[in-house]
Length: 62
Image (cartoon, rainbow, N blue to C red; front, side, top):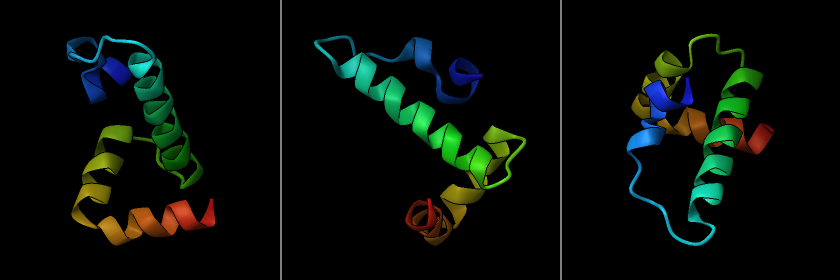
């Protein structure tokens, strides 16, 4: 899922700890969306991109 939704295999970030940091950020984002009740992560990403205030609210309540 992470590769399809986030294009992880196409990432050009390959130096030092950057790949690990990006994987942590992606995993955190997926976890937050799951806690919010999302069952379709790709759709949830689109919804949160359209309404960024929803994302901020989600982060504040987590």
